[in-house]
Length: 443
Image (tube, rainbow, N blue to C red; front, side, top):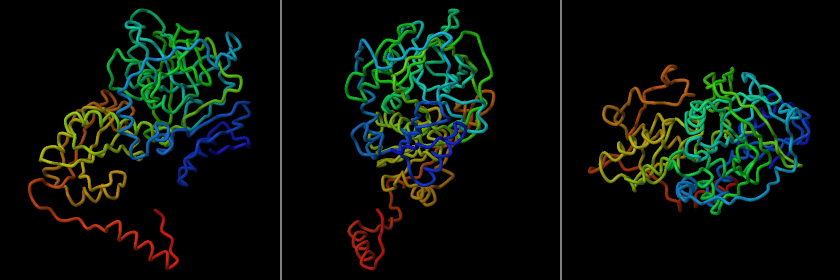
């Protein structure tokens, strides 16, 4: 953990600090003790390190996607508690002033400061089943936030149903919770009768503790730092964005919804939490892990010889999936490609490699493409496929694009060129020789 005690400007500087750490190959949790003189510490970068996320599940970094895959299918009923620490301070009515919170302006292109770590919780007006998830929240005033529900998933559908009934959608915004909550909230393939909080409980391995807040009796994490209670208005739209998105571009695409705050509850010593946006690992790494787990779930049903999946941070944690498999027959790589593209709409490129290729080493992956791919038979395209709304390469009207699969595996049933390898024993001996010569080799 890195604590920064000196005052840091609330405009742009906190983001610059995190990106400089990334450039130096470091990813600590960062606590800004004085961000813009707001009188409340701001924590960021809590999800920028695979080892830290793996430790939350008690596994190694290499085991993280598989552990996530297995545990997010173990739904556990929630535990409801009578009180929560965020009830220590309650602010209502004219006393509400969101501008007093240390909400940073992250990029110069951003239309305003954004709450980026807010988890919205709402209930389906028809079924009563709740959901929780990330949605960007633009500061518009003391009690007003711009909201974009552009993912078009459950929260968007709940709001649409409320509008059809002529109602606003009651919403609680939770700030300051455990990284496993964030991981569980980004699970999308699960039965409609299941609560995301039950998925999160499965990740913890115990019932997730919730407490009822003051808006529509919504149940929210009892361990949170802060709850902002309010509603997303029906049939009201105001400009929202641009915002520096996970793509590394400014995004102007938005549903332009409006949230009005009615109450703030917080711990007496509350700390604010902000996700560093853009292509920061803090913004993207959880997406990498959860997509790896979701794709593994889909592939393992019919292709148990799939070994691992990697969604690289460098491809925005979304657009490329690399699959390792022990291929036993021709056509399996194509099956894996089609299943992956049918599972995750954000994914537009899939590369399948043999299990002798390190899917976390892009040099190794590119080597496999360069030496094992025959373009006329191993690369195929799917035009007109549904893509991500925030993908700047998608059609601006219907958000479709062309997706691509690459089979970079060796052909089955015939001899192929033998890969050159150096044994671990020889590598260890080489390191000893070099150390004897005064050369220290890392790793």
